Amino acid sequence: MARIDRYILSQFMTLFGFFALVLVSVYWINRAVSLFEQLISDGQTALVVLEFTALTLPLVISVVLPIAAFTASAYGTNRLSSESELVAMQAAGMSPWRLARPVLVFGVLVALMVALLVHAVVPMARGRMADRQAEIAQNVTAQFLRAGAFQYPVKGVTLYIRDIASDGRLEDFFLEDARDPQNQTTYTATEALVVKTEAGPRLVLMHGMAQTLRVQADRQQLSITRFGELAYDLASLVQSDEARKRDLRAYSTMRLLNPDPQLLADTQSTADKALAEAHERLAKPLQSPIAAMLGFAMLLLGGFSRFGVWRQVIWAVVALIVVQFLSTAAENQVAQDASRWPLIYLPPLIGGLICAGILWIAARPRRLRRTPRPETAT
Image (tube, rainbow, N blue to C red; front, side):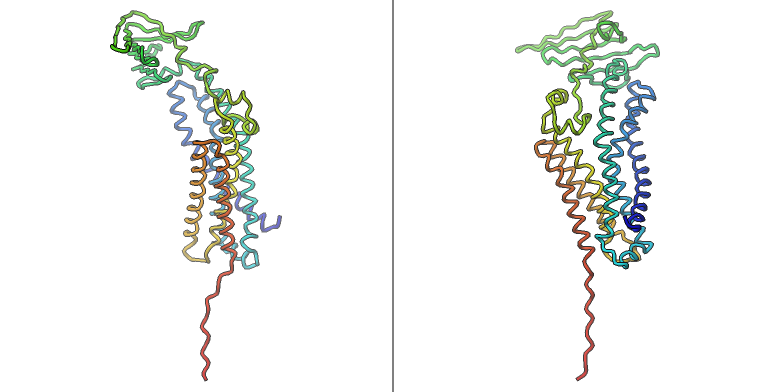
């Protein structure tokens, strides 16, 4: 690699490290705040919150790196232009295609980082998070000890607790079980306790009543039963490991490219969806070279101006938004029909063509204005 290439690459990598650190911090803090509120309200400890926020970090980094590459490329090119270094390189005979070589190397390096994340680190983190969520879901107390909010543990069940006493008593308890439309039961009690037994967790209701509504073809019947104590089985409100569907994103790319029957059974998915997830991972690293080249090539358009290159920067941002919009549209199409997964590679292809077109325009020699010839006297 020539010295000028190493110089440009070192400039871009330094800026990339700075912008990546800033953007990851902003995205991660925003994600961690919502996760912190949710886990703390579920009764989890600070260590669990820290573990979950750390497991979300690889996904945040994989999303942010292409944006950081674009920002570093645009800012670095602008600085090279403002300090007349880019002008000196062009005056030395270096074409836009030649100047784009270190930028392409920079984009490929960022793409390798993204590929390492999306193919190895992110699936591993998602798998670990799924296992930890399964462990937490088995703790019934953590699921239901949330006062002042309506909760829906499973479909058709509504739960409400007014307050939780310091000794663990659930005050003013309400539970509606409407999973069977023909036989709906509503439990109310002044107090309730969660008791762990060998047969599973039990909910002991005290001083309340059970209202059962039976719906028949020609009439409705309501029966009310008052009780001093009533035991309710909580096992039906806790999803078992067998009933819990695993996420495709927690599996490796190789398994998704060749999905076996066990994987499809665990995820309750199809082979097309597994292939779509795998090819989405394969296409994601391609965003980084496209973003880096857009930030560089667009700033080569136009000549020197004392007002700066803000117009080129705006056009570069617009081009990046267009490519990202196409990527989102392709993902939506694949989500509707997984057999359309080849559409995932269309946005990077269009982005590459845009970069090539911009470099071709920048490499064309500017036409000199025709100067009028002096008239000769006859």
